[in-house]
Image 1 (tube, rainbow over the protein chains, first blue to last red):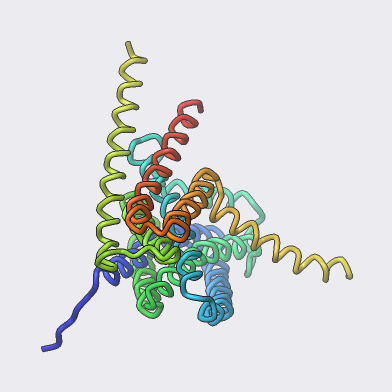
Image 2 (cartoon, helix red, strand yellow):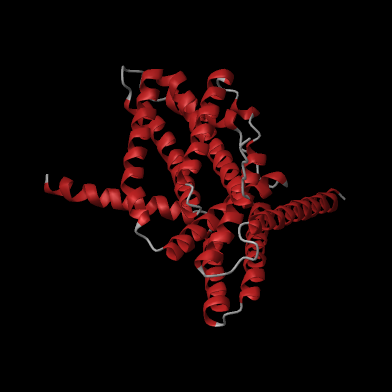
Length: 254
Length: 81
C-alpha cells in the first residue's frame, strides 16, 4: 500500500489555487455566455481561444525568467502581491457579508453585458465588439489565475500541482457553465471569495515572512495557524460591522 | 506611420502599468500603503534588530490591523453615500 503524505502547505496551496481559479472562471464564463447569446458563439469562442493563446505566450515568456530570481527576493515579491490581493478579496467579502455592499450578482452582470451588446451594431460573422468583450473577459480573469498559479506555485516549488489545481477548476466551471447555462448566481461566490481571501492572505503573510528571513517554528504548519487567525479576524469584523449597522438602523428608526 | 510604430510599445507599456496599478492599488490605496509599511516594520524587526519572535507576532497582527482599518474606512465611505 502506498503511503501518501500531504503537508498542510500543499493542502492550502491546492485549495487556494482551485477556489481562486474557480471564482475567476465564473466571472469569465458569465461574459463568454453573454457574448455567445447576443453576438454569436463563433465570435465568443474566437475571443476565448485568442485570450487563452495570449495567456500561454505570456506564461512562456514570464515562467523561465522566474527561475533566475533569487529565492528570498521571489518570496518577498510574491508574498507582497499575495498579501495585497488577499486583503482586497477579504475586505470585499467582509463588506458583502455584513450587508454594507451588494452581493456579487452574476445574473445582473449577465443582463448588463447582454443589454450593452444588444444595443450596439447588429451581428456579423465575426463581430469585433463581441470578440473584444469575450477576449478581455477571459484574458483579464485568466491573467489573475496565471498570477495566482505562478506566485503560489513557484514559492512552494509546486508550479505543476498549482497548474493542475487551476486546470481542474477551469474544467469544472466550464462543465458547470454548460449544464447550468446562465444560472451562475447559484455559485456561492462570496463564501468562496472569503475562503480564498483568507488563504491568499495566509500565504502572503508566510512568504513575506520567508522573504524577510522570519523563521516560522514548525515550518508550513504555520500556514494553518495563519488561516485560523484570519478566519477569526474575519468573523469578528463581520460580526462587529453587522452589530454597528443594526445599532445605526435602530437609532434612526426611533 | 512613424507615430503608429512609436505608439504601439507605448500603449503596451501603458496597458501593463495600468493593469498592475489596478491590480495592486485600485480602489484600496490604503491596503497598498499598509502592506509597504508592514514589510518595512518586519524588515526592521528581523534584519536590523534581529528579533524573530517580534516579527513572527507582529506580521499577522499588523495584517489584521490593516484589514480592519480598510474595512472601517469603507464603512464610513458607504454610509456617506
